[in-house]
Image 1: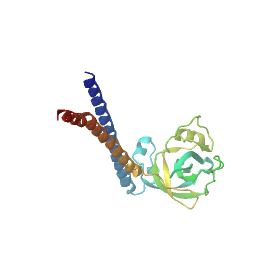
Image 2: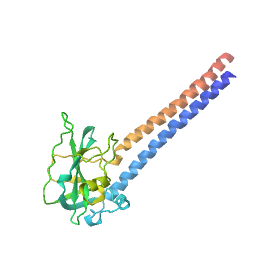
Image 3: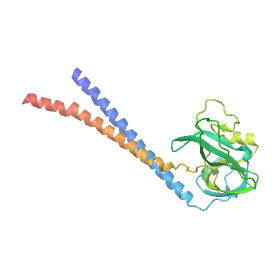
Image 4: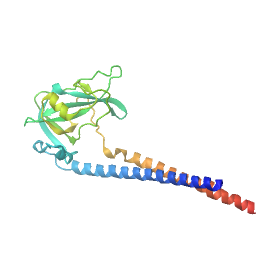
Length: 242
C-alpha cells in the first residue's frame, strides 16, 4: 500500500512540475511574440511622416496612439526646469536621463528626454550641465511615454536630481502646460549626451532563451519520472522474472 502511495505522490508531483514548467515556457513564447508584434507596430508608426506639432496629443488617450511617431518640433528650451533622472542605465552603466521642457509656439510644452549621461564615479550628485541654447531651436525625435517609474523610498521633491518625473506634479512645479507625453530626442548638435534609446524587441532573444530552458526542464522532469518510476521498475521485474 505504501509503495502505491509513494508512486501516486511521485506521479502527481511530476505531473505538476511538467505542467508548470511547460506553462512557463509557453508564457515566455507569448512574451516574445508580444515584443515582436510591438516592434512591428513601432516600425510601422516610425515609417509614417513626422507628426506636426499642432497635432500632438492633449489627452492621455490621444497620446497612446501617437507613441513612437516621428516628430519635428520648434520652440525654446525651458532650461531652468531641466531635471536629471537618477538610476537610469545604458548598456549596464548607471547614469541620468536629462529632461528639459520645450515650450512650443502655442505656449504649451513637451518634456524632451534629451539623452543619457554617465554618473560621476566619485560624486553621485554631480552632473555635467548640458549645453542648452537660448532662442528658437529645432528638435527631431520620437514621441514616447514618460520615463518608467522606479521605486523610491522618499516622497518626490523638486530637486534637480530625482528618481521619477510625474508630469502633473512637474507641470504644477514649473507652471507649464505640459502635453501628456514626452519626446525621445534623436538628433541635435553635439552636447555630450548618448541617445541609444531602448527597443522593445531587443529582449525577444532573451524570452526565447528562457522558453527553451523551461521546456528543457519540463522534458527533463518527464524523462526522470519515466526512467525511475516506470522503466527501472519494469527492468527490475523482468530481471526477477528471468
